[in-house]
Length: 129
Image (cartoon, rainbow, N blue to C red; front, top):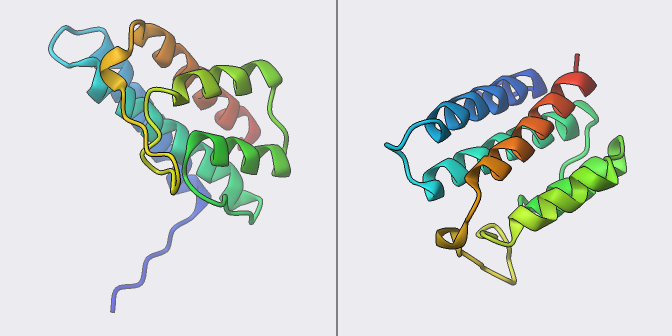
């Protein structure tokens, strides 16, 4: 049996690393929008999980909506950032138990998704200093 010692600091570091890689990829023509979008969503998930784990509260699920709800319960979240996250969730909701959605091919502005990922990355970094 393997023991894993997961902690919120690991999640925060992973979130930052996923974001930085996705940001670099977004500046190149070598990677498609779906891949960059998914990397940003992994970054958001890792950052929000770090916040939740530090506060000993786990989300119901790992959709953006569920992660936002969990963060709202433990520390609160800016309403504008919440609305932006709900906007980008519409492209993919593969963690949903009820409403599976995958329309990442319709992403028009990947730079907006990267910008929102950056906001979450900075938010988590500030909260968890």
